[in-house]
Image: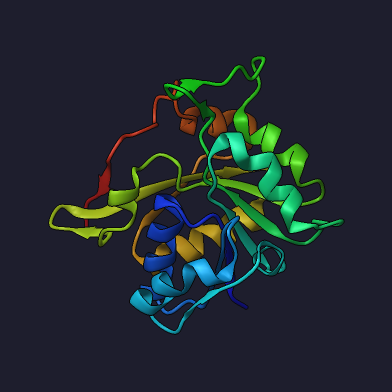
Length: 201
């Protein structure tokens, strides 16, 4: 089954390109509709299909790759009444305009808030600690494979996302539950945020 991506900005495009390069089928969407993504699909190849937000959300693995301030409207646009059995990958970081200040989360981990927007989903925090240009680059470097951190409260979902990351070529590192691993990954503030680590061969 294809991977669904909601959001076609820098992060969404970077992940779509890496997934397609690894042989995955990808359904990508944005708020402007499939027609606005035709050029991206033409550049990326036939394995990338422009779609509506609802179609992207109808996949087994759904990647949320939208700005924090637009997260609620993006989830609402999916028109999903039951997120059960879906793996939702949260790539977001709680930053907002006008100067990208950290949002006030009331002491909570950002992914716990995201989980509340997609009740029943198996949420995995991943792909949020690297900038888009690094995400979109070949994960195999002269020094080794780039490290991708992930965390979530469902071990099987974590492993599914880790397998996907490994197929792409990243070194997937599972940090455990969202309350712990998500805090380590969170940007800004988490000690692992923005670290460009590689795993030696």
